[in-house]
Image 1 (cartoon, helix red, strand yellow):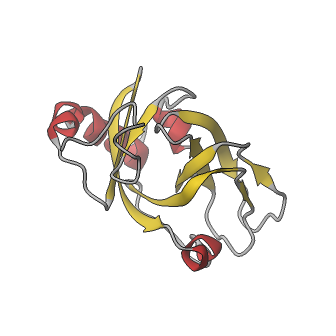
Image 2 (cartoon, rainbow, N blue to C red; image 1 turned 180 degrees about the vertical axis):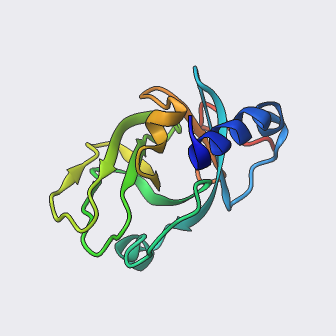
Length: 158
């Protein structure tokens, strides 16, 4: 690994044990799976206007940051990259927080529809290529206060 990506992965490796102990925060998403654990600082887009704007017109995003789109209930989720300047990975989850689909390296400014399927409750957007570098896969689990504790497979501590 080189430079920025290597340092980023090393940071996640060093915070592996710490992530499990961190309480849920509205501005953080935790992910766990066979790769270990990771944490992202996120902006939450849970209103229609916020979801419509997303990460449009931003020239960059820190490696440990992302945007979490949250819906009122499970639905079909479709995205495009119109006016989005940076490549993104889109991580689709169901209402339990389980990753159901990962779309890697969405092309900036592309208007092709990216379909996450039905039953989508949230979508985490992170920098393009990062999900593969971390080893994220379908079946991994997200934790965030937006996932109802009664349904979450990795609920926030009460």
